[in-house]
Image 1 (tube, rainbow, N blue to C red):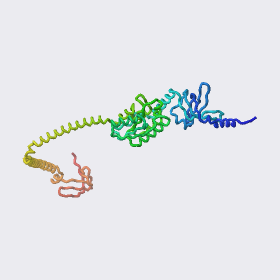
Image 2 (tube, rainbow, N blue to C red):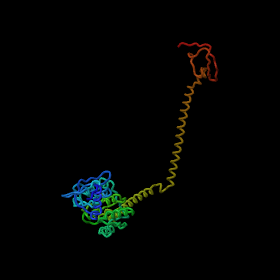
Image 3 (cartoon, rainbow, N blue to C red):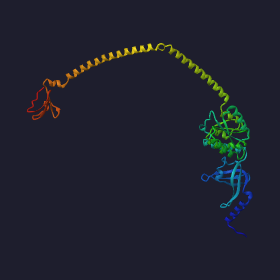
Length: 399
């Protein structure tokens, strides 16, 4: 009888599972139970169950990051996986690479989750919407090259705004490869110097339009530096690209009308402006004619010599008046100056000294008798000179 260890047994079972070609790539249908996304590693752990049994499953981070929705307990899904054994615990489990919701309800949940996620990221913020150009020269179109939407756009553009150049960035608009193709076409149109980009396709089922609900396409629309108009499907169809774009049109034809001015309407507006300018110019011309007539009717224009002569006479009168007025004013100022000089002279200390008085000072300071003592030396200031004196005796007078 063969005897082996537990580790050898688990390793053997693992090898059996990994060598089975049927178990390397298979699809398993069931409901999710006990879903957990590990915070640090990013790996997802859950059980896939049906009414009778269940099996453990793991989805590694690199695959989990590609999920377009957040799996929930009870959600019916179809998983693409391989079957292997976890040696340490001696269990077999599914190694999941893709998770696809099963049924319309699950798809709606996935779409709602994706919309809520993008909205939380600010992708749909109205404040970030770019203004559409009034008169675009280059219009980028991201759509299928052989679709009816392109023909509608060309027809409307030729009628409304033939001056614009149409730049086609062809893309697949449905199918598994459509999201990648649309993202590449948007990038090309954004780098082509377009003034506005029309992202569009004709109508179809919800599944046909699903590429325009993918997160990668929505983020490409959001990251475009060029304003984007989304016109996907018919008027009743709505995709996530409609919310991320700078404007939404119900049809491809309506997108062209939203992006371009109408040449006929512009012509009418130009005609209205031309008539308004003509009326304003005629009115201004009449006003200038009237003003010119008033000027030419003035006497100075009929006889400029007389007007100059009269002005010269008035100037002479003004000069004489100014001269006489200035002389009168100066005489008044001279009389007042003489009077002020006489008053100032009468108050001068020199007039007092002239009458025989003198000023006594000691050490440069005027001094009174009460401040003197015998032996002090004084400086005497007379009207006509200076002298020094010694105090022999001080006699104070009572007052």
